[in-house]
Length: 83
Image 1 (tube, rainbow, N blue to C red):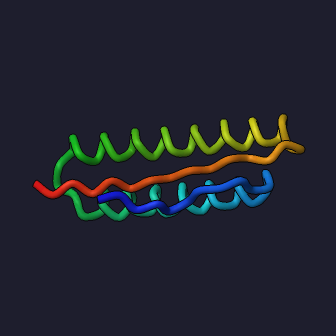
Image 2 (cartoon, helix red, strand yellow):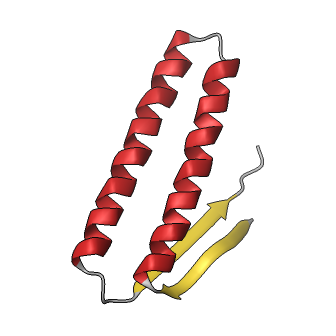
Image 3 (tube, one colour):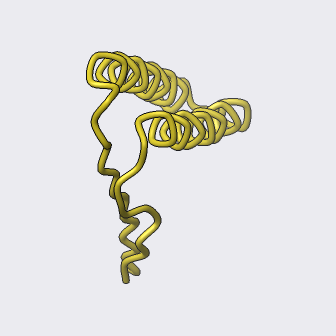
């Protein structure tokens, strides 16, 4: 099963706003999981993932700032697999 969350062309500002909000949601999810975790390994993994998400957002901001007049194409899929 696949859910199409985002598909289309957006202004750079709208694209950046969506990316920023999605990143904040994902970071918040990892922060919540860190608070609930008893595993040092899990905490370290989630802290690293937060850093990666923040780094990717900075790169996206920089790219959009450098190429700001172009339209930005965003696509996001969620794939659900039942085991």
